[in-house]
Image 1 (cartoon, rainbow, N blue to C red):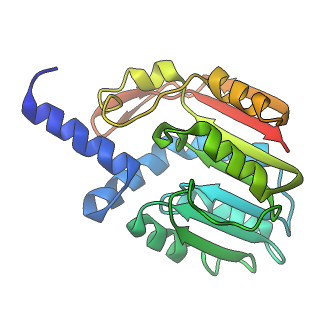
Image 2 (image 1 turned 60 degrees about the vertical axis):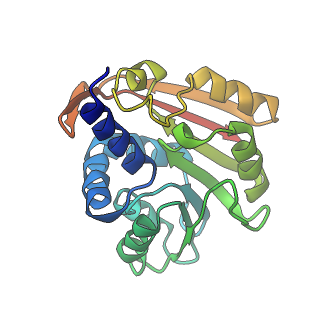
Length: 222
């Protein structure tokens, strides 16, 4: 592709996907909620959390896909969101605070720099955030440190093949095979690692682009 105007549009889309901001960020977050609802549902189901537990989510966007999770955690539960975008962090707080007696904390920070109490979480999860991590091992070490013994990590992603077909991913996306994530987890001592692949959602149109909707749900225990 050599059209400067088209390249600029794709760069702008990629930047908003990585760090939604302003009116364009609000719009793209809404579109992503539609596209990623099933992936988020599958990732949350893989957590197998119980009421009263503590959950950390990486990159929740505006938080709407986590509303049922916060309700489920309920009394005694704790939900902590780590969201890089200030605009999305504010929206996440608005959408999730007060949904139930679950304590909600939204931290506006890079997940690689977030200072959470060691061994304080029963589960850590996130969907479609690893594309923006240059150092996967650093994140996996942090998640391991945050989790209680036996705690669970769940990462939801699209396949590398599906993501590579999108025209905006050359601009700032780090695409990885699911097997690379599994291998990195194994090297760090995660146990009972699983990679569940789903290819039953067909295709969707997102911002004028037709996207194959598949999913890897990768999980492991500390």
